[in-house]
Image (cartoon, rainbow, N blue to C red; front, side, top):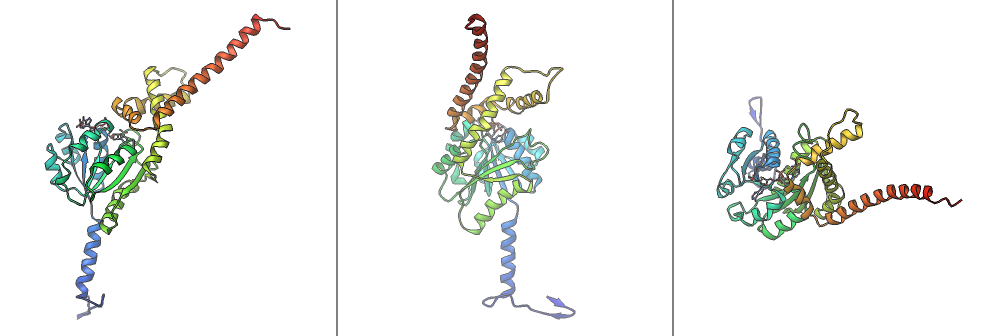
Length: 301
Ligand code: NAP
């Protein structure tokens, strides 16, 4: 440090070449904080939606997918690789799996993990959680970290802002070294910085709760969509919210809906409960109707 024309050396540590120690510490700190190279596997609707925000936040984003999205990726500032080996050889810090629920196992079983860095963080954003967690634990090399994520919003509901929208996460396997801990923190920070409501929850608990909330929402949306409900001239607020439920769910691929059902072991029971509830409501209506008719038929007084 120079004060006036005098050079002043300040002692920062007692055991080595002090100025270099401090510099190295600072350099290491800034390395930890630096932006991530994020690899998106599955560059469909949701993969693109996330990638756009990652780029806006200053991260380097690369992507690969079954289909060729070179043009769309280029427009978003994402480097697209048709060849999955080339994608891996870019050595992303983080790989985020954005494939459909149904294709995830097949995609992971053919994934060339050996071409990635030994120290890679794997995330997924599937709308079911226990299934990808289990797959990751079975298939990923032991040195890889695992962070399961579920942004509980999509390109429609999160179009303008992610503020207050829930991000469920489970730190399934994160190494204890500062670099690994910081990298996991940096990924979560992407969502926190957008104002998401951060919910730490085990994958198993997520699936229990999602079966009675998200799956039921999608099922009712699909039922109403199948009924082809249409705007009326006397639509109430309640009816308008039903139409917007159809809008929010019926446009998703059927694969996604089937994935929500098939790969969450809690959904069968919830579907039965929904069916039972409709039967119960119907029987309340018909019981009352029958009672009135019988009262008219039989004059017991
Ligand atoms: P999706 O239909 O569930 O998935 C589309 C993606 O899966 C595309 O990248 C597609 O690749 C890939 N894919 C499909 N079949 C494949 C196969 N046989 N082999 C290889 N890749 C295959 O639609 P999405 O909305 O983009 O959802 C992606 C993931 O995000 C899903 O796991 C979903 O649960 C999750 N998620 C979605 C939302 C949402 O609102 N959409 C919200 C939260 C989480 P190509 O396009 O290259 O064919």
